[in-house]
Image (cartoon, rainbow, N blue to C red; front, side, top):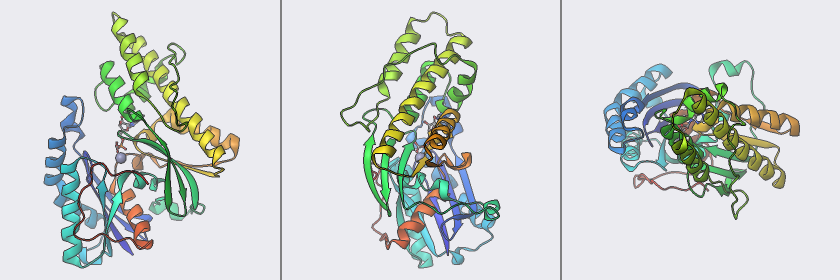
Length: 339
Ligand code: KG4
Ligand code: ZN
């Protein structure tokens, strides 16, 4: 069975073809990030225009790479939300037209839930070393530019355990990078500079939430801002020390809550996804802690941490198998919630 995944929720326009919902035949991503950089963040109008310009080309390239024709497709899966409405509508309109034209089913996908399928996707070379069976019950840690949440997944049912009450962790990385004059996006550059810095140089107060599994990252961002304002000269050693200290605190809070939730809900498997799951310290800390506690960590390969259509196709395939179908009434839902 061949699924076409379509992702246009933010600054990426991506199409992917998957065989049986897991094997990538193609995954083409066109990013408009370079167009947003001068503005220090995503400009919604630029993102949707870029998607509109790119959508047809990326679709044809994905089919070409997969060596298939449109008529070979059996299912169309598209990001329904959350995201920017203009960008979402480009993908949703394209998906509806294609599913109608080909007479194949259409499925709307929650982008956040899709991030957590990324570690289960396989590439051609993985067929030689098949991975162990996918867990039916697991804890999900979603860390992206717009969301930070802990979820419990049981036989396809998703329960939200906690989420950020203010900034998402990726958003905090982006804002701290801006404060330090490092440009956008902030995650990769802070991750890199942190290796040159002293992570003990600055200490941040751990935020306390009513719900133990909620997160907060706006306090640390403000603490960084106040420290920077007091600093006369933003020298490279100062920036690196701040990057290392900020990263250590964020990762520590994420990892701590994840394992408390894993203990409480007695899960054997933890699945991670979202742009911040590319973070080197987070990947290492989760892996090390997982080994210590004998829990299986599922972390996506780097190329599937950020937004891509392969994860949309994979999640869409699962929803299709659960009997979910979207009608031609499907529309973009910018504030679609997880669970
Ligand atoms: O999942 P994603 O591509 O987009 C959303 O759905 O939001 O995540 C983008 C976020 C940005 O905030 C970016 O700064 C962050 O992921 N990011 C990282 C790293 N690479 C990307 N954050 C920390 N460390 C990284 N290496
Ligand atoms: Zn995302």
